[in-house]
Image 1 (cartoon, one colour):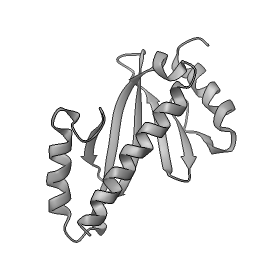
Image 2 (tube, helix red, strand yellow):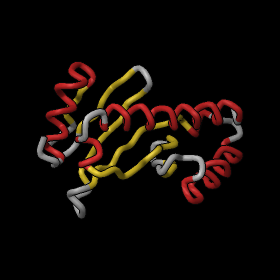
Image 3 (cartoon, one colour):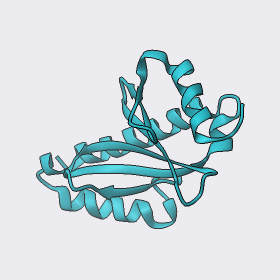
Image 4 (cartoon, one colour):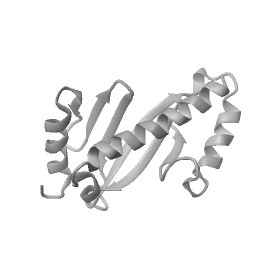
Length: 133
């Protein structure tokens, strides 16, 4: 496979079939039981892909301050995010975002490993959110 974002999208569509959703010309998502994992090219660096997933709704947490502090600690040297970054979006959601090389995702098993690792990290933070509920 050629290692560019468009080829990665075609590969994801073939691999994930019904879970694949095209999001305009420059993004796609995989809608899975675990949640939606979105992919977009990093326009300033075509060798990189932005991977993103909404972890939970911060507005629904009664004690969101404690989780926000835990997220801040998790971002410190990516100690609790496996290389990703947690942020609170305008929608009130806690989002996990990460950059990955297109080449890594295009390698055999690379996309599946990324999705697995990413959703596992998101689940870890959902569990932490439940502790602050």
